[in-house]
Image 1 (tube, chains in turn cyan, orange):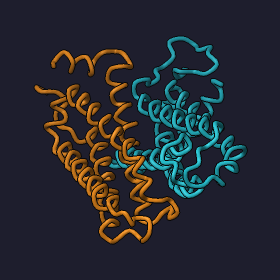
Image 2 (image 1 turned 90 degrees about the vertical axis):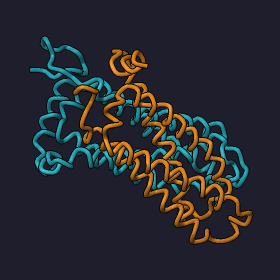
Image 3 (image 1 turned 135 degrees about the horizontal axis):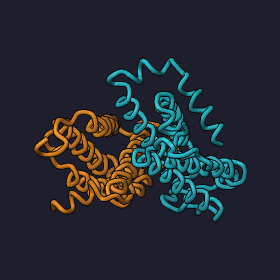
Image 4 (image 1 turned 120 degrees about the vertical axis):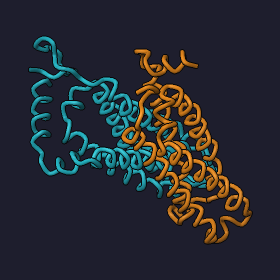
Length: 181
Length: 157
């Protein structure tokens, strides 16, 4: 994993097209602001959908509320793009940061949960009309989704408190949380 | 108060400053995000969602707001000088105050119409939704810029 982390850091460092913008005075603050817009869009629309699965606002048919999900996807895409800008300019600060590792883990939980939802649960809940309670499986998916996105936000916020340093001695860990050499 | 300020700012535990700022970000997602999703519905997205029923999400919006009011006071106690000497801080508060006025106006004017889901939302309601979206975007932008625009981090510096 250490070799992969090093390769990824070098590859991201070699990206040039993002550097003029990100090194400009407004680059970093603008990107952070847009990252927060994306966060709010995602949490608002996906969070509302999760809450409906959990039993809030039951008079809304689930299929009708599902039409707001593309706005959450838009928020996600915005945040992948802005997240890439951060990574391309300071890859070492993310790739060796334990908080970033946990952020990716929570994103993976959210991703697997989405796969479970669309492969096994969505066809059961999309036919439910106004007033219908979602089945237990859908409630679990809704709860896991909410918890995962909150985990992603918290880990994102904690990044600055777990900035990695240079490894004091040659590291042997599987996943490095300090930079080698 | 000084002790609390020093504790939030300097205590080397994740339950001090890191916890407070994490709450502030989750709360932002709830208050601005749910408000924005309702605004999008008012503006015509997901038209088959009965608007009246979206009222049930308002307690979560207000939970996000109070979470941020409390965590925001915590952040202010940690770095009072940093905030009060920065004009952008007052701009942020103004955006939040305006956004809340628009949310309350949507609660009063839009949700109070018993025929709400029988006809398109009137122009006035749509304008309130746009105004609310703009104010939340302004509040988030001003909030993020606080980290870049302060002139004094602590008094005496």
